[in-house]
Amino acid sequence: MSQSVFTPHSKASQGSSIPPLKIRSARVIVTSPGRNFVTLKIETDQGVYGIGDATLNGREKSVVAYLEDHVIPVLIGRDARRIEDIWQYLYRGAYWRRGPVTMRAIAAVDVALWDIKAKALGAPLYDLLGGKSREGVMVYGHANGETLEDTLEAVGRYIEAGYKAVRAQSGVPGVDLAYGVGRGDLYYEPADAQLPTETVWSTRKYMNYLPNLFEALRKRYGFDVELLHDGHHRMTPLEAAQLGKRLEPYQLFWLEDATQAENQDAFRLIRSHTTTPLAVGEVFNTIWDAKDLIQEQLIDYIRTSVVAAGGLTHLRRIADFASVWQIKTGCHGATDLSPVTMGAALHFDTWVPNFGIQEYMRHTAETDAVFPHAYSFSDGLMHPGDGPGHGVDLDEALAAKYPYDPRQLPVARLEDGTMWNW
Ligand code: CS2
Ligand code: MG
Image (cartoon, rainbow, N blue to C red; front, side, top):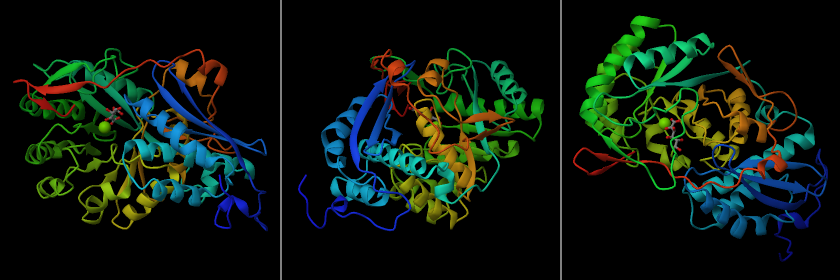
């Protein structure tokens, strides 16, 4: 790399509380302990290293190439302390801004750099963000069942396990393989085959059934537990408005992804017809995807995650912007977001003043072993741990035992064969 006065790492910084941390190497590690994960490890000349998650479910290799071919070469030699400058360099410098691949690659670098800086200072990451705003992070678990009775029982098991909030997804009579319904109870993994599984969808059958599920849930468990549901982009705005209205008596914590959100205007119609709280954003990559939704107060929770939206540097900007309109966070936390993202998210959640809730879908024992972590769950709350950094590591020797296993997400068609949103 050419040296010039404008190259950030060419000047020795003085008066800083930590000495320069020159990036010596960066490597991408792909492992599949039950599902695929892409991890970036950045090492500095001081021996301090950091790790970041770059997993893009079903499209993992695209981010691997982006990092290896285009990002790692420009990182070597830079000062790892300059998190903001490196973020701007990767975002502005790409010229081709935004998108799931670019923003995940930036996220992996960003989270690894925050990890490095926090470790160098000997502080938990939440302290660098501004310190603790709460004692624990409320999470919601995933209860699902093939029938209404199965789903009621699954929700009951989460309540017994101490969860204060539970997402309920159920098989729909007449619909084979509805979204969110796994084959086993504990772990739901949609990316299940090398070529996409074809599923068939009927919004009519779903909408006829869903209010019965929530009526039965409230009858059995009362109104103290928070209940959530994910529409997974399946409804039109008008259908979503109708469903939201019909769910009002059951006081959901939120109805997620009521409709597809490329057109932010679509939420105006939903909003004007229902007071069921709305959450959206797991597929968003930048503040621009949510700008109108936020400033027109068309949603209640922003679901964008550390890994999807360019890391902590950008996610906290989104959260601050949302706070102006009293919109809270509700970070995506499905199993395709690795324990590294979970750890970083829990530090973010511990700090962020306008925190709403955090999704927590347990990883398998194999995944937990590959990613030793400091976070823990008790009484419906999660804790990021108080050690230095984000508290999640990668056991590289163990990771090497689980080679990449190509899998894709399913697709959905309407009953007449028309392609629809999975
Ligand atoms: C989801 C995910 O957790 C959620 O709310 O919608 O299950 C999503 O389908 C996966 O993360 C896709 O990779
Ligand atoms: Mg979702």
